[in-house]
Length: 154
Image (cartoon, rainbow, N blue to C red; front, side, top):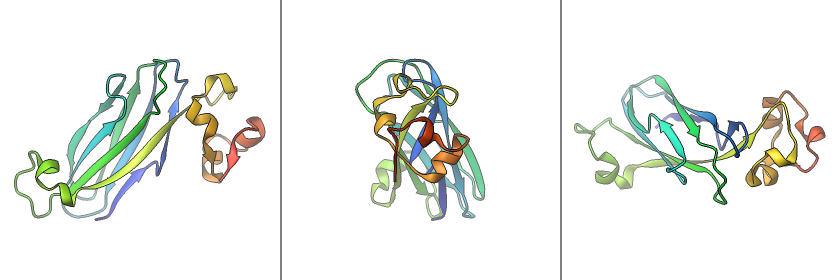
């Protein structure tokens, strides 16, 4: 199954973990048949995901919006995207329970980053320990490691 989920591993939330902020996940289906997806989170009481579940048509993509209601928490914000091919399935109700052995999943974590102010106090504990890649560095206008010395290179 050719499903692409962006970002690959870390969702950059646009803001501090102390305030309301948002992020996105993009799912792209490169197959000719439909795929059903479902998004789960470790903090469902303070994170709203829209849409949380949907059937994605063949050769199409869908943006999933994540809305974080700024509350302090000691838990890390993580997501799991479950997806299942509907190629040979007629009824798509309760498919994740019926076909649980065929379900694929992708795990993502979230970091909270304010692009214009990279002071340590505004970043979540997970962002402080996040190891940044060169691709991540480019997302923030280049050379974030010089501005924030405690970020480690992968």
